[in-house]
Length: 120
Image 1: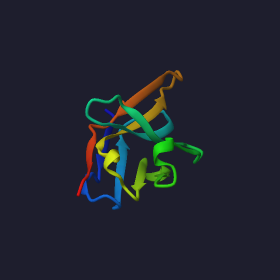
Image 2: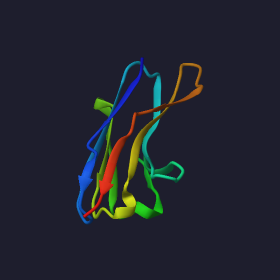
Image 3: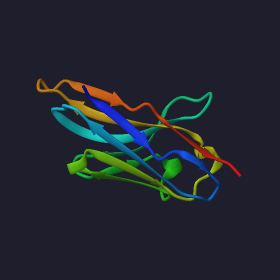
Image 4: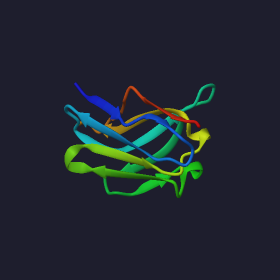
């Protein structure tokens, strides 16, 4: 059974920083990419950042220059360093694992989400 566990959310003042972690455990044939999505109240879930197994990273325009995604392949862990946080970054942040099984069928796994609140 695959488990995706996020940690690191919380309350921070505008301009502050937080670091999110996501660790995946269990049997996965192949991980293509890991990423972070967020969903604010009343809004659709949106991509924040994604990193491939080869280390290529992409970011939403809203977070470029402020957020950094990184991965530890050996630990099946991905991190999201969030700096210069703004109130509009407030959301539930979800970790996504894009994978394929032995028949090369794509399978997505999601974490339970972690709340990030930016407020003074």
